[in-house]
Length: 117
Image 1 (cartoon, rainbow, N blue to C red):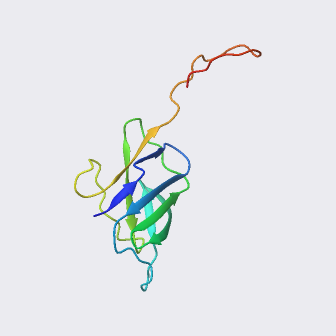
Image 2: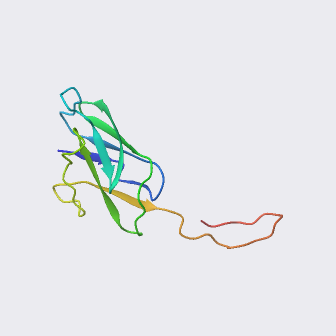
Image 3: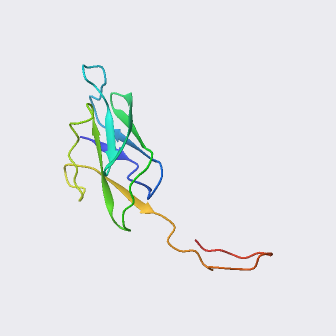
């Protein structure tokens, strides 16, 4: 069984997700850990035989409410199975938070103004 944490992250910029499972290793011929969120490939680091950390420098942008599949591979080409509906196979990395509105749109150049983001 494979699990990921966190299941949410930024809509753009650097994303970090941890894959949890068992039997992870990088000590075999042609081992080259890999990970990706959507189509954005990241750097995978073996933390333990139960954890791989994935750092993706530039996550692709998606529309509000959409999600990206998160995948890992011990050889950078045999990817875990993606699934967009969080079924029994595949894992989805949600990208729910971005700034969608700032209110008010303008204000005085001096003094205090409450801003709602």
